[in-house]
Image (cartoon, rainbow, N blue to C red):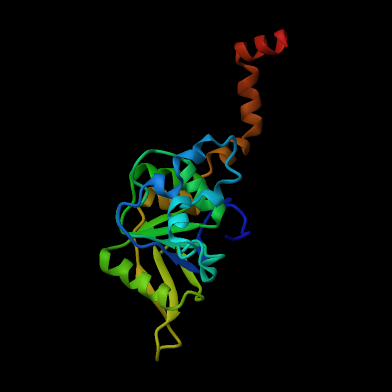
Length: 215
């Protein structure tokens, strides 16, 4: 887990260590088991992230291993986040400390729920993701930099090439990329930034005046 602040404003890059979670079709019920959906707030969801998988693996799950504590970039494989639509899944990842997800592919609703929280999901082909996972597993303490403008992730230099970082090319559609780079992903923030317009609009709505009169 990490104490880094939640996403806010424009997100040009995400930096940090990588945690690898291998396997295809990891669904939202594995990311956050259904019993955690009864929560009133999202605050305690970090402990529920992959709770059943972690229990089964008795401390050897990547989210429990000491070398991955504080990691901010999660690297997965195909169809990550499939299954039922639940915003608790990206909430649990975010509250554990994940600030970006890189994988071969993502379920559409999971991708959208992540975008709404300011968590970029970038994809890469099979060979690229496997190479990135192998590098991250070989050097779990290494820092990586995910650049959203270029859709690249930079890692530590390869042996014998200490002056140049390794680069893996990824994909992110123009729409989500622009939303993340500009800060437009934050719908609540945009709403609050137009307080004067909201107040003028609210003043013209008769049903709001009526509620105020009854109160």
